Amino acid sequence: MAFVPEVDKNSYIFPDPNGADYDGLVAWGDDLEVERILSAYRSGIFPWFNEEDPVLWWSPNPRLVLYLDDLKVSKSLKKSIKKFEVRFDTNFETVMRSCGDMRRDKEGTWVTEELIEKYVEIHKRGVAHSVETYYEGELVGGLYGLVIGNIFCGESMFAKKSDASKVAFYHLIQRLKKQNFSMVDCQIPTDHLKSLGAIEISRKKFLRKLKKALDKPSNF
Image: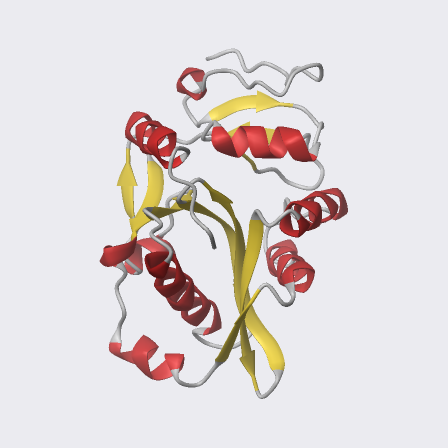
């Protein structure tokens, strides 16, 4: 079993993600400073934990990513796209809270009050963004994530109406294409995201792509 170090509170430098344990855990520690969070993403690491646990920092192997041209749009999704109004960055905090509420009702959530506060600050810096879907004026779905170089690091999504989050994801991809992004980091493999075209790649391959992405900053 690999030794998992505590984060160094005197430095924003993380351990090498290639030294993560079998599950992809790189480090642990409750220090959720904004600069530490951004340093983590630039290193291919992200925070993910339950409310009662310490903050856990991950770099999974394999990593789930979506190359923009690989997005799968089903016939039913094509129909749903026309049903919703889509906006960007108009309701970031509410999207984040909605993502947390949906997961809290199921198995618990890492979207704590402290995390919301920090990501709202990151949003104000122009690094974190939301995509929102509205039906008859009501927010019914959306997603949020961070821009690191020319990669969009997807964090979470929610839907109160069928296909609402998928429509947000579709419009996210269209915007990323226009702005010359390379891919979406979907982080943890899930059947839902695989059905939309996401694939698994090795951690080493992801980290190579991330290194290149940092030299190609894109404007969301």
